[in-house]
Length: 434
Image (tube, rainbow, N blue to C red; front, side, top):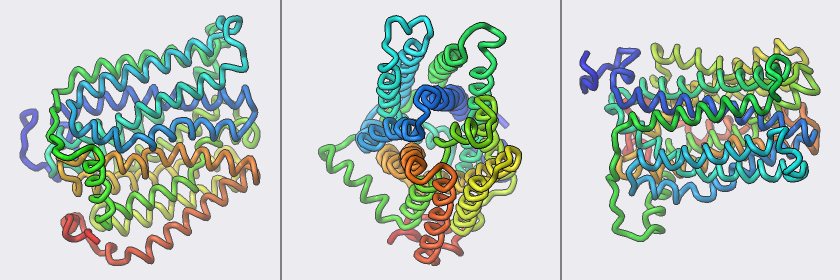
């Protein structure tokens, strides 16, 4: 089939990949995610080695979540009224600079110039800057994705987009943990320094990939002031029962059920597998997600999306509880795998619902609201996990989070029974408006 052929390819597992601009989008997202996930893992382990504090790990998430949530709506407004490729170039350049600063302050050779007590605060500041970048990144990439393929292949595109993110999330943490653990033994370079060299390289690659995208001019020319425009985006989301329900379900389940920030504690003290084991643990969750997403490219979960979403989040909560109870590294890996698999199903369903229900002229602002609910729920959940672990202990905090997730699913089920029989063809604004 010629590149960019608009004919529907609903039964083609590679339908979305037949569009050139979508392939450029996938490449850009893959390399950036690889670097970002690697950075998240090694910074978490590095901070824990310096502080031995679960609360300090939670603060990493909070530092990123505050700006990501606080200015998300403004980021969506700017995305709707701006050319997207230029936005992405500026965003990736900003992330590159913040990573470069973290690379410099963690260099052993810089220890004579930077007081040890300043290293953690400087890293927190750079993570805060990354949070600012994320407030603009989500709305910009949401719009690029939506315009890179026709609507009839959105479900397939969502599968490939999420799969590329998850594959990078496998390779990034695994590479980060292994390089961090073995670099000093085989190269003489400290683990944190070696990993940051790789991180900086892949951020540069993602920056180069942005140039392969075509320009995406603004389709929204605001006639009202910024506050009125933002109100329109918020109102649209809160009037749509399915969209609001999906966002709320993810927000509360990830907020209470998220435990990624605590994995360094499990790796160091409970399972005793070190940074190498941490990388494997992070990668295993993503491996479950990728394999599930590849299966979903053939067997779509969109036949009964709302029913399947509730089932997936239930499996997610049960996996968290079992992980918290496990004392075996291999059983823990199994439950991380299932947690990633169930999360992948919910990601595909939520992202497809979001794309189908959002009009083109509101994609930036709706994506911004989504970022406030979902995009930063992981980081806010990390803060909650770190705080709860410091109060009640690491294992009880994880188990309690899983139990709360199951409670959230039960309440959501009772309030949204009318959405259970809906199929993909039933998802439109008239069917789901409250």
